Amino acid sequence: MLGRARGILAGKGRALLVAAATVLGLAAVAASHAATVAASLLKVRLGGDAGQTRIVVDLDHSVTARVISDGSGDRRVVVLLQGVATSGAQGAGVGLVKAWVADQTQSGTRLRIDLGGDGQIKRRFLLPPADGVDHYRYVIDVAAEDPGQVRLTNAPAAVRTVKLRAPLPLKKVVVIDAGHGGHDPGAHGADGLEKDINLAAALALRAKLESTGRYKVVLTRDADVYVPLEDRVRVAQRADADLFISLHSDSASEPGLRGASVYTLSDKAFARATRFVKADDWFMRASLTSDPGVSDILFDLTQRATKNRSATFAESLVTKLDGHAPLLRRSHRSAGFMVLLAPDVPAVLLEMGFLSNPQDEQRLRDPRQRAALVDGVAASIDDYFAQTSRMAVR
Ligand SMILES: [Zn+2]
Image (cartoon, rainbow, N blue to C red; front, side, top):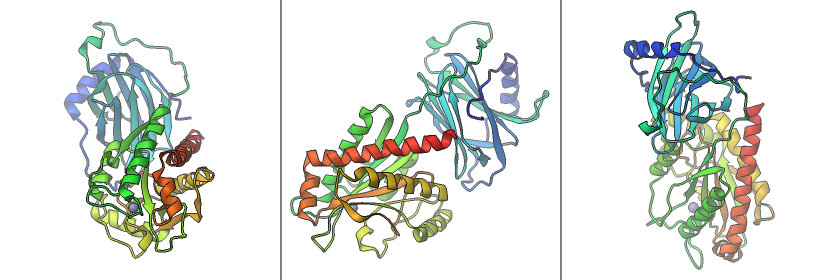
């Protein structure tokens, strides 16, 4: 119900805007990650034209906000409304805005705005209740980067008849992490190294996902270089990832052991990770576990919901890989490995097979057989987002 609500600001908004910008200045940048819920998102309204578009977020309390992406360069505005609760909402755009979605994160409501052309945040401010309006309004003005695009007219922005359209789907951001690299080779096979197989699979998966037009893909590395775990985490955070998948190849002393397996974080490790994140502010330091199979693995998760979404994806991955690649008997395992990622990003780690097994190594080294595995992973990603968007619409 919240999702489809849209409205248009009348010309009066312009006068308010000047006054508010003077009195309040820009919204304060708060530092607290662990903000308690202090406000609720009531409604999101849009108005304006192709030169300038205003987004108004109606709230029942005051709020502070943090800009994660201002739209410059990537046609995407992301603003975190700290401590704001939402049940999720989305809608079609007006003017510069193509579509928007608001969803709940650990720190508050994340508002993502996809722009139809070049534009960026020009100003943002909070309006307190006034002039017969009984709630707070957080206002974001997005303007075209190219001044030539702005229509020079004294008339107020065209007030359009509000027609409900199906919201345009936003591109999902998938971060693919090719394990190891550079001076860290990972597992050794008879004919090659894990780091090279991981990278080849990551590049193939990127190509496959990008070919659908539905995904923005970010790699933590696209060459044979060493990337510290903390840097992989930052890549995912900066990308504002919707999903994180780490690709690895296993090794075992038992040469008969073969097949792919998928890891998410176990309850025990989850509790520990949560504590760690609270103590160390988003980042966890690598602490090798006693589990020999996963000691080189990177992972994350701190939020119960994120963990559940990770499990959803992991189950989908196991299902879709079946038939594309041999699987270990208990293919979805949870383990106590160290995890290093943004707390809000659902994440899984895929061990694609065992380099200590000759058949698996052959399968992973052969581009055609690797492509079959990559197809299965891509299908599971499609499946995961189809499931999560159905949940959001409900
Ligand atoms: Zn590995």
